[in-house]
Length: 241
Length: 259
Image (cartoon, rainbow over all chains, first blue to last red; front, side, top):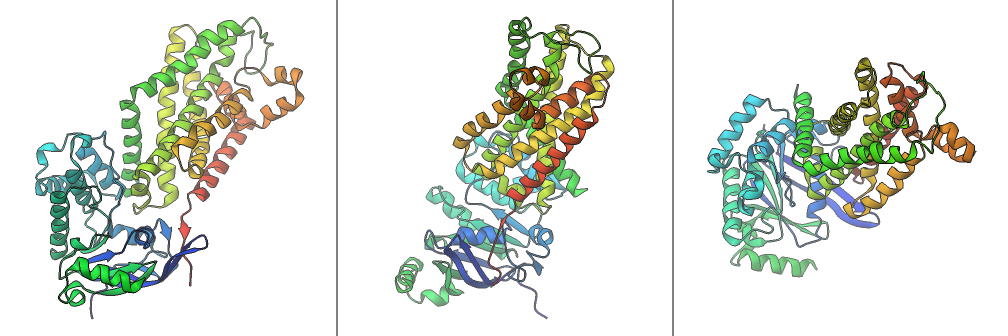
């Protein structure tokens, strides 16, 4: 029997007032896969992320996280998700460690386990000696990496990132993109929302969202053929318009 | 256990934030002290007070407004923590809290309790200063007032929570504060007994009587003298439950289409 996907979305539709934002969106992301949710601004990516994180409540049977229905078993589903929001969600006047401890506690980790995982995460990021610095002292790239490390503290099966490279310079953007691709290779499922096609790697899955509809769902290498990813994205948007 | 650690974390964050904002603490203390030592000094002659429960003798005007000022601190503190919720929503921290694997009512309840504790700290500091200047209540009163202060803090914090569910932007907050704080404070028994108000306007006296803030003030007033005002307790508790339930409804997430 095959393993249940880390994320399964079936026939998701949502309106903001009279304006349909998502229309019959369906796709799945298996374990160990980097899936890019690609679309221009206003395609519905952030709304989709809000549904996947339970901030907008989906109908039963529409969103499953590691077999847990977000509508029927919200807490079990949320326990399997790590989220990095588009907008940083950090207390800039508290230390790196305090920020990580706060998150760990929200996810029910005891102090001992939390401290061990925090130490491990900071070591991995090369930030162990900065644990007691205020976050305000860190640059944008470091803050983002810390947010990613934070989202992994409770060892989720699915990592959701909503435009995580917005506002970062090119080297930081590339470092973070590579870092998260590595996380996927290590076994976690990743859903990476972006409007920047150059962040995709050939082996990634891509779900192309346009005006709330999934236009394409496949592996980047198979879809782009002999074009660059950016050219393919431009062509796909033109034919969808 | 996991719920407890989450609640503790929320409380710690709230306290840490309060401790680092020294200006906020100072402002919270200066405001009631100005009322107590300046306003009360000027008004004591103008406002003659008869003997009313729970007092057994004639009292100074400062003694009369002490419970009202405790409630005022809690009112400002409740609004302040609601302001911090609007801020949390704007900077995304609210999302972090609402995507944790715990029930929404629990997370908001923990936030409410944390805010109430911050309010209690401010009241404690105020009562210490008042006592240093000779304005004291019976020693046991400080203890019996504690649950009354906590319930009042929860009720006023829940009102703040309710407002924060509806206010989307920080800029709109100042206006709402003026519409809530001042009418609530002035249309209550905090600064003058309701019978005084009755002399000038029966309608205003009626409004004072139904104002939940009046009940919080009276609950605290009686508790400071080791007495229980059952009606005030009932109304304050009811208001707390109604405000919190409405706030939860306000924080209820949007839903997707079911088909």
